[in-house]
Length: 257
Image (cartoon, rainbow, N blue to C red; front, side, top):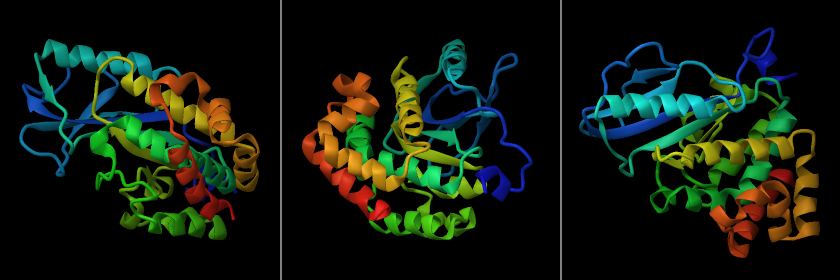
């Protein structure tokens, strides 16, 4: 049974990527000018003048670049000053409604192999951040992934206890997506775009593979060559270390085996 069927939907909703951008600052817009793909919502975890900008609906692959430029232009027109504190983050939802649970597990398994490197790349203040905990920060998250794997039911992860992982499993039961919470809140052109592309590359590599085969491939190729196969074009930006990759793989092993 696919995720959209578990949600009671006849078909997966269109669009593959959803984005939420949290900001604190000054002169932040209360409304946007014209018709834009974003909405403004409140966020109780932020301080002072703050906003959370959320895509109204998931966008198709590649369309997020235009949407992000629209958001940047709106902030510029409003003469907004954005202060990206440690409380702010970018949350990216990758639509998994068209997948079966076993594909989602493989997606998570591959992500966990790279999690240590990716969270560090997302920002020093994101490492150990209580709003985007890695599996190494909160090992109990692995147990929840295994519960999903064993039951095959997205209802098994409908709990706030998994909401603040760097990959939020509750979003799967709520929206049919995996929410990745690690990226710092940075609207510099290219930052969020790269992060979305990294997540989609991990998804593309994972779907159709068994989680145990992913771990076996990691062991066969070695950490650096495995990284190159999946995310090689981002090597110079992420600069993964052997220690990070092996640590991530050990967390992923707990899922696969």
